[in-house]
Every structure is written in structure tokens, then in C-alpha cells.
Image (cartoon, rainbow, N blue to C red):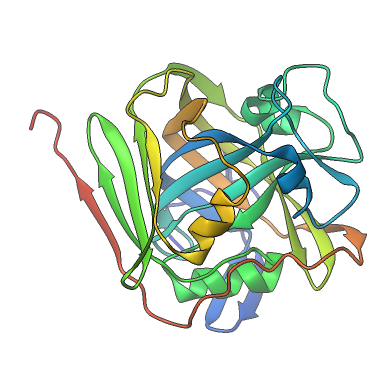
Amino acid sequence: MNSQIDTASGFFAGTRPGKKAKYGKASFELPILYLRDDFFGLYFTADVKKVRGILPSDRMHPITMPNGRAIVAILAYNYIDTTIGPYGEVPVVIPVLYDKKHLPFMGFLPALRQGSHPGFAALVMHLPVTKVEARDAGRGEWGYTKFIADMHFDITPEYLQCSMSEGPEHILDLRVMRKGIHVRDDKPLITFSVKDKKLIRTVIPQKGVMRVSLATKGSFVKFGPHAMARSIRALDISDKPFMASFYTERAAILPSGAVVEENVRPFEGYIGKDRKAKHTTFYTPYGV
């Protein structure tokens, strides 16, 4: 554990001592603490029928835009300082409602407000990581759809970008331009995942400042031929994002989740291979 973490007061208060856990090659302490990262992502629309067709529970409903299309978010984390070490991660998530079909506001609002809406969570469709320990911990504890992938991050004054592949096979490139209004975000991130046919809801406290923009010119995702990319495109994802966001600062606490439903449909995602991945980052100095 990072000796610099203050667990006696402040945001991380009471998180240590934690619970020891071991899955595969991962030995760690719960909750996992995230002190510093580069976090950015894009929001796209997708065909609601195709999205509904892959959901693991009939009690789960896609959040929709005013035009009736569902939402798919493609995000990237370059974890710099955590209690399981540095690694990269690219979540693909579907904002959903559980036991609730409609919202009183436009569908994209919960994508911003997240934990403020009862029943809201992000179903984790894919969650590639660069570290075997992160994969084994994620699949073992939460059933997160993790596999090993190579990631290179470019962090510049103009944009944040992640290029991801599995060995020689390109998966995707994600770029988010640095623009948008500043929003304080102290609401939890809530996820759904499936482990052993059990639907798990995990509430992840976080604290940070994000920038959000509905002007997405210059931001993009480019897909490769990989199976993960094909599964996303199969949802009839829009060519352009309708929203972009990134965090200028953020901390988070990942605890164990709680089972909310049993005997749901399997949702294992792409498995991948047991391999050592590349995780590289290039920071362009300001003024260059």
C-alpha cells in the first residue's frame, strides 16, 4: 500500500485496514484505492433493440436519448497511482436502469449525474486491462469482463488519446479533445457486472473535477478488426460521439459489490489470452 495515503481522515478515511483477497495471480486488499489517473471518454448512440438483446437481465433497460437510441460509452483510464499498481484500462459501458424503464429527464442526463438517479448503473460490456493482476482481480471479485490488451496513452495539452491492440491486432484508437465546461463530480460511479450468473451492483465512490463538452469536433474512436471492436460496431454505434468528457483530477474507491439478482444470463465478454501486455504513456510537455 502507498504509505502516503491518509486513511485516517479525508476521502480515503476508514478504507484501511481492508479485506485481503486473492484470485489467480492477484493478491490485493479491498477496497482498491485510486489516487491519480488520466480518465477520458466519449458517448455514442446505438440501436436500442440490439443493445437490449445483449443485456443479461430482463429487469435491465437501456437509457435512451430523445431519438430513442441507446447510449454506449467508450472510456479510457491511465491509472498512475493505485494500491494494485499502475495499469491501463478501457471500459465500454452501457448506461441502464434496473427495475425502472423511463426517466423524467432526457436520457443523456444520467450519463452525467450517474448515482443521482435510482436504478441507474453502467453495465460493463468490455473492460480490457494491461495487467494480469488487474484482470484476475476484476474477473474474480466482480465478474468484470476483463482481458489483457496493449495500450499506449498520449497525453498532450490539446487531447488525451489511447491506442489499444491485442498483440498485432488493432482494437481501437480513442481521442478526446481538451475542452468543455468544468463540473465538480463527487457522485459515485455505479456498475453492473455478472459473476456465476449473479448480477452484481458495485458502488464506487469518487471525487474529482471533470470537463464535459457537447461539441465533439476532433474527438473520435477508430475501430480495428478485433472481436471486441466488432461487437461494439454490431450495436450500430453512431459514427460521431454526442458528448465528450475528461477529468482534470480524480480519486476513487473500488469496494466489493452486492448481488442484486440471481440466475441472469451469462455476460463474460471477450476472454483473451494469458499474456504480458505493453503499457506505455507519453506526456507532451506544455509549451512544446
